[in-house]
Image (tube, rainbow, N blue to C red; front, side):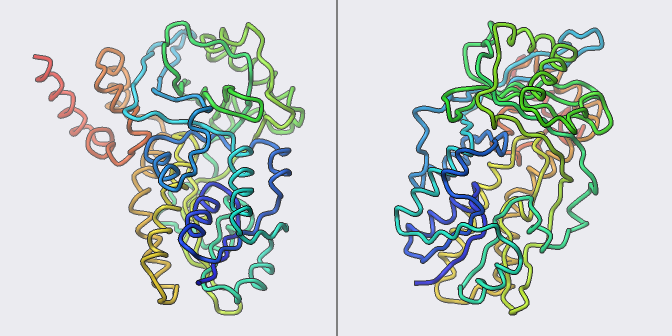
Amino acid sequence: MRKILIVGAGQAGLQLALGLQARGYEVTVMSDRTPDEIRAGDVMSTQCMFGTALGHERALGLDLWDATAPRVEGVGVSVAGPDGTRAVDWLGRLDAYGQSVDQRIKMAEWLDLFVARGGGLVVHPVAVSDIEWYGGNFDLVLLAAGKGPLAGMFDRDSLRSPYERPMRSLAVAYVHGLAPRPDRDTGAVQCNLIPGVGELFVIPALTLSGPCDILFFEGVPGGPLDVFQGIRSPQGRLNLTLSLMRQYVPWEYERTTTGVELTDSGATLCGRYAPTVRRPVAQLECGAPVLGVADVVVANDPITGQGSNNAARCAAIYLSAIEERGERPFDRAWMEATFEAYWSSVAPATKWTNAMLSPPPPHVLDLIAAAQSRQPIADRFANGFDEPADFEHWFFDPTKAATYVTTLDGNDA
């Protein structure tokens, strides 16, 4: 029985731990919090997982909220015009539904399940020295501690990291009481684009107190949405969110007038970070290599909602690679090859995410506008959230975009 240490109890770390545990590995997870402390803490993300990522959970029997979490069956896009109205407004339908489950629910329950199945849990704030102490006692050490200080163990890959600074400031509020859109008959992630200013995303979700909505502002640094620094009060953050909605996306603000309130005292999150790809392997002083997992090595901006989806892909790819390795050593060469398999899967998501952080070129603006009257474009854009590799065929290059639209014209004829 091979012994594996996973540092971090997030989407990738716990999905991988439970998958390895089911295959007979002796797994230890290091977490800085107990399940109860996770439940009692602040929200951690704006996760919305689409069909492929949910399939990875389902394959391991970890889709524990399928019947209770609201189903996301579409992705809507609205573009604010200079007069404060919507210049563009459409809905793309997903081929397979998505869902968003508050990570305080998911990670706490998965961690309880891991322990109930006999997994080893070490609850302790983790420093590099702790990994040094534990590392020599395991066949494989995986760092899945997200965007925290431990990620600094891994060198930045400058060739794969075009940005050296944060490209958006982030502000999140989980709320009850948001009225449904009167023109929608299905649950959808709503993407509101405010040119030159930022974005507001509205995401149906499941939280500790039941179904809710996530209000998520992404602001261009230094712009009018980049104003949440220093506001510590959860209610103060919500009040500012509502004020900005009223000014920049009044059609969404109208949904709040029936009475919106925070789901709980930990329902807000603010911050920023630079999108970064890192080298996948760090070496401990004892000589043992450590393999980075998910956000540790590929941290994209959440503007395209790929974080949890990438994490689920990473856990699935690493699980398969570990199992295929058999009794052979988990050496640096194997770690680098395993990461490259993961990178090939998520590089399209990284390219798309980085592209969406920049002002869109004219052909993309044309595609977004055309989707209002061309349902196939809206549907294809929506399903790109699940399979970003498809954007390579029609979205990035103006010639490919024109060819795609011409094909649609021929079908319409």
